[in-house]
Length: 85
Image 1 (cartoon, rainbow, N blue to C red):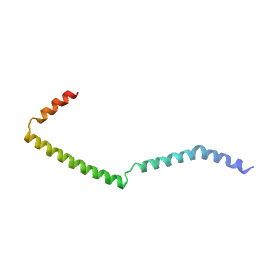
Image 2: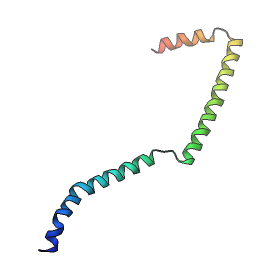
Image 3: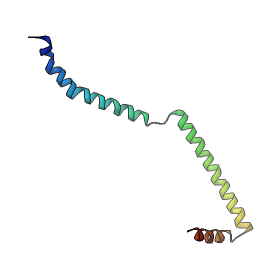
Image 4: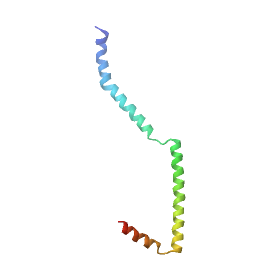
């Protein structure tokens, strides 16, 4: 019996069952590991969150100043939004 004939069935089984499963599992693991944030991404995200907190504080301050100086400024804002729609 030829050595090629002896290895034919195991090679076919490997190519049909083992190799595709191996490839699919490999790319699943690569994909799941790439979903995690890097340290640089995490640091940039934290910086953005700090900036958002600062900006929201500034907006609240500006709104309180406008409320004190011009109590009806929100009414004018609502009518201008109605005109845009």
